[in-house]
Length: 141
Length: 416
Image (cartoon, rainbow over all chains, first blue to last red; front, side, top):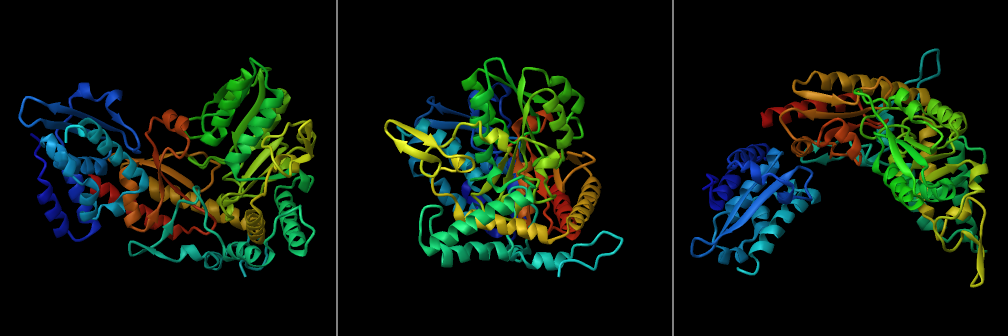
């Protein structure tokens, strides 16, 4: 299981941190907590397009448990993007698929006031990831 | 006044007076003074350009060439005077040799589709360079595919110069068209266009020059360069977006087929057949960007109001200063160190993706661009995913470059 904090803890920490520099440093730190991806998963089929950085994401359904859970890992070659990936992991990874319909990543990013830091291109990459997750889990949640 | 009295020495730009003319420069972003170093993407506009566009819409707005009423006459005069201004700026032989387009991308598509369509045969080659912007690659790839021709690219050296020996060796009888950039948007390299044109003509090829970045930095003389086509940009030279102009050598213009069809570019239309107008109208279908043309002309007049050697001296000082302060930063690699270059600084930090660096600089008030800068083949050549690019205009200052360097250091420390 990843050692990424819960979304509540992340949100609390962001609120506590005053300026953009501290928030960026925290985001970079979160990104460093990403579990390493299996080398075999860092392939073109797992590339997520739409981001200036290179992003790979592997998602799977874990049907060995009840309810079915989402298995997810992702990484990029940019620190800030890794931080954003950590937030997505905290929202989605290991969660029961039937609860994912109520996850609101845009709302979370807004609460964290990260919208300002997300240019349209950056939002595209993030949304590409969210779309992939929804496509895989959409008819199950 | 923007110049000191003439003397034996080069006149200096009065930078503060120049900057005072640009309203957008004087604002804060994220609580810091804006340091605008993304000028290769687009330049800011002096008040006189903004006013010229507003005035047209307030007082002279009408369609051009078609009406007999007073406003139409005024609008047409302004539009054709703008054409004359462009011709004067690039030292074209006649105003009619300058065609208005929607920008350099549009111009390169026009050239590829008219020249390419009229002279390319299967097996022919179009010779570009590795440093070209996508707008001077993709249109050629598209027409080459249609005409059975091939696109090849001359290599770039490690310091970002065109490898002239390789370029010359690639110029054989199969090359019918050469197209290259005057000043690289990603590296700042200023290419030896006069020599390039000479070599290309000796080999029997026609030459098109992408001068998108050039006119904001230095005067252009199409007759001295002796090129067959040359495209300039409005918004990259203190003018509005959505406007550009392409010079076409008159003897070639008369041989070219039309590109876009519609009103204005015709002589007569019937369902039995249509005949076309002469250049430049042949290539200006539809209602043009009249306000844009007027704004472009005003921008060119602005550039001409400053002594060319003063602009040059100031920009060379920016090149030297920027190169020095950035080279001093540990962990920074400059990409594009040609001896002859415009004040454009592309770099990588060893421990951070350009995509990481951009937002940090933004929070320091420093506007730069990150990514491939529409030059993916060039980025691949240098083995980088993209770069951070800081690009100056004539209103940039060495103090701004110092702020950039401080912000880059802060970014480096944040990611270490």
